[in-house]
Image 1 (cartoon, rainbow over the protein chains, first blue to last red):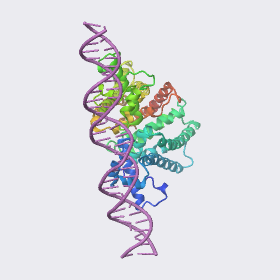
Image 2 (cartoon, chains in turn purple, brown, cyan, green):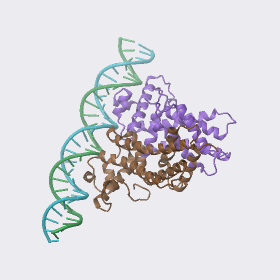
Image 3 (spheres, chains in turn brown, blue, green, cyan):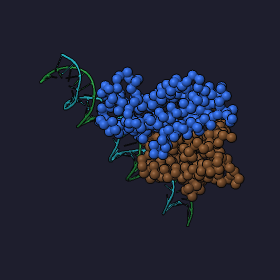
Length: 215
Length: 215
DNA sequence: CCTGGATTCTAATCGTGCTTCACATGTTCA
DNA sequence: TGAACATGTGAAGCACGATTAGAATCCAGG
């Protein structure tokens, strides 16, 4: 399963084809399966036969949708990140115009966390394999990662300029520390240990206090 | 290279053999090389020929020191963690008896971070591959990880009982968030962006404020 | 110097997994 | 219905990488 709710929702908008077209649904099934296997076995360990089994078809059928194994992997790695950014940007656009920079950061923490845990196969696949990809695949991933990081950089910059970032924190390092706090969640979170709501509330409190000047 | 300073220092004490015995040094060279390749290519992608090249010998020579590829990998995964725990426990033992729980947490943050960045190949190998190992290798790794987590759990518990942990934080979740903050550093840190000292100082400030009650 | 163990090498074996190919089945619409 | 297109299959081809076997080399102690 690609996400905790069991419904595929990725890699569709970009295609411009309706989701109910059968071939589009099969394509998504393959992507979801690939995310799951990639997360569990890694770049080199992902076998097309495993993907095929999860997607409930035969391995060669994958070649009808993707030119090669590497293209499939590239798409998985890219889609999770791109989707995350779209989701985050939309959420930020919806915040009231008078929200403080810190309030916007907390919205970002919540949005990132909820989406991350929802599509955790894509997220853990990206986290674990980002450093293990061959160069030609890594390029598009790195570019997208940069764009995603830029959104956060702007959030931090705004907070800093508004005096909502403690003086002894370097904005760049603070951003990396926050990203660690929330990215790591995909590695340890299990529904049995805590609800997403609890995780979100704790993470927000954690980050807000980590960044804010002492009163 | 297995660590930023270029000198191997792992997997030696446990062997009971002197480091200057030539065969012991070769063994460490192979372990260091394996950590580097494992971190870069992943469990399934680590080729013995790559390890051999880094260690400057031929692939079959590895079999003189390790019974199989999996045994070599198991050792790499285990050693980084075990070494980290030993290092941390020693540092904690050296803290003055009157140190507060929060002071001890900050010592742990510093110790973990310095060691992690020093042996970063072992660390990133462990982070990226923990979820990708076959069961028989994962077992020993999980056991060691549990032991390491227990050290942190005790630190958190002490802080909680001393009233040094904010009321709205769940100690378990707080621990996971802190671990994310510091574990993630191995993924982004580069000497060119910030000195280790700077990273440590920022992380300590970040964590202390994230956890402490507002004055 | 020379011998026996320790260490390392070269060459061959063997399984595995991506990919291609030629064909089968399903689906749509005149 | 049946022609054209869209999907999916089973059976090879082929390269690559772990492992083993057996021989070569190194080196300390006599």
